[in-house]
Image (spheres, rainbow, N blue to C red):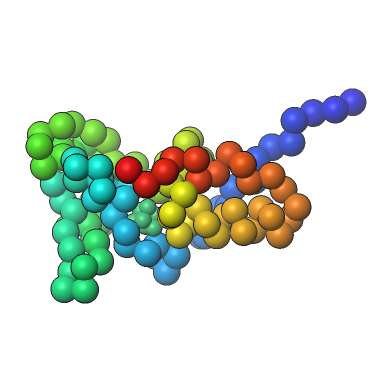
Length: 110
Ligand code: SF4
Ligand code: SF4
């Protein structure tokens, strides 16, 4: 019997803030349509002005509606962005386990 192996993804505890480089890509920092809540600190690193309440419907600065979801969902549904710190670490762990990582990081930085 053969079966397609399930893709491995880390548990919720993996998604600690330390792995996020705060590039802002997942919040539209580089696609010309950033979220209305995206901000930059004095060092140029991005942060969310409503972080504790971020999930749910929001708008981009040019008025487009979208739903903010967890980065875990983004990665598990789409493979995530190539430069994302979480994606890079999941790929590293997959390779350590001898698993395929070709489904990850397929979204180039916009
Ligand atoms: S609400 Fe969501 S998309 Fe908007 S800045 Fe915060 S985390 Fe990013
Ligand atoms: S793309 Fe990844 S590293 Fe960049 S801000 Fe979003 S979660 Fe953090």
